[in-house]
Amino acid sequence: MMKIRGDSIDDVLAFTFIDHDGKLEPVANTNRPEVDFITAELQRLKGEGFAGTVGIITPHTNQQKMIMEAVNTLPERDWLYDHLHLKIMTFDTCQGEERDLIYYSMVANPASDRLWGIFVKDLANVDMEEDGKIKAQRLNVGFSRARERMHFVLSKEIDKFGGSIGEALSHYREQLRLAQQEPTVNDVDPKSPMEREVLGWILNTPLWQENHDNGRISLVPQFEIGSYLNQLDRTHTYRHPKYKSDFFLTYRDDSGKKHHIIIEYDGFQEHFVDLEAVTALNYDQYYREEDVYRQKAIESYGYKFLRINRFNSGKDPVATLDRRLRSLIEERQESNGVLDDVLDKIEGLRANEVKECPKCKRLRDIEEFYDSSLVRGVGRICNTCKGAKKEPSKKHADSASKPSRIMCPRCGANMVTRRGKYGRFYGCSTYPRCKGTVNL
View 1 (cartoon, rainbow, N blue to C red):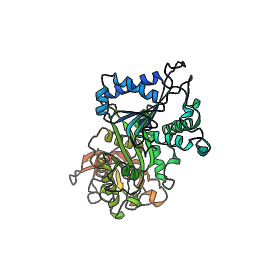
View 2 (cartoon, rainbow, N blue to C red):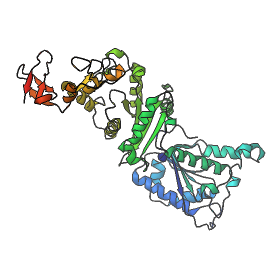
View 3 (cartoon, rainbow, N blue to C red):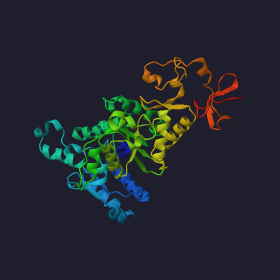
View 4 (cartoon, rainbow, N blue to C red):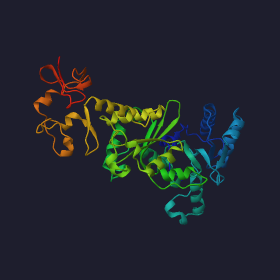
């Protein structure tokens, strides 16, 4: 069977339906339109410089011979055999052979279908059929030869195929249909409410909205990245723990290049150390060692890593996530992934528009600290942590207009303060020591 996939489903499973005229072929158990399609595909791979290996599997020996003859007449013949290691096989002769891409020419058409003699009729009653075990083994071996992609070439609708071959084709069609659907909250970790929220952010990004319907982007929640990496490392020099990533996003750009991005939401308690010291400006220095090690291991395989936490999700998480994903895809330098966000927060701190709550360690707008019961009108703990949001006094409500910059005439400091009543600016950057005021 296919291994754990790391690509978009459209890059793993494909179906091509040939418009067959329904007439009997001159040679039994052959299908000329399927041969023509496959040879055209081989020429396309040559033109695109395909770097993988290719195999063709068909149930009938006569079809195998017809494909071989057609390939041998192609100008690309030598390149196909030398570079793609092309091999044309039947279900009986493919044992031990593996290729990155396998084309399956199933031959059967509306006028003739002799697959009943090749594959078992009912997988649930193998022992009841003559040579049932051999026929079942033939099916299992043939459909486990592809490393990366299975491409079925069919000359009639899947529902018209009978027996075990019909069941197998229906199974792959259903896998394709299910994978093409958008992930739902049922696919994420039920123990993590934030993963549900992050899923909503991803599905609402313009990047997802623009590319989901055309099949250029896919998302797998709870991806078994540990098992997948073990699968890729055939030397078995190191066995990765069987950990899962929150989300595995794959994007194919205009050039056809695939970008694989691991997306993790980092809970504060679960992924940071020395929690009292962690702030929005230094959180990247307080990740647990095992999290850092895992990220480095995954990145060593060429995967990109995007961490989301309460410090870097931004005021508009969807827009922030969209910007960060596009930055990874376009391979722009992004410092530690949140440089723009950090600069915005630093500017906010300088302008007295933002303040850090020592209890929740979050940077919040100054309005979230207003408390009319206090002399200064601004508390040390944010209203969210206090458990009830208090309305600001009229004085501070009046001062909520857009900040301006002005030099304090008393101490000379460059202050950024809020406009009060009668066009005055209260305080400066050294308030309350200075307490300088300026009339406009």
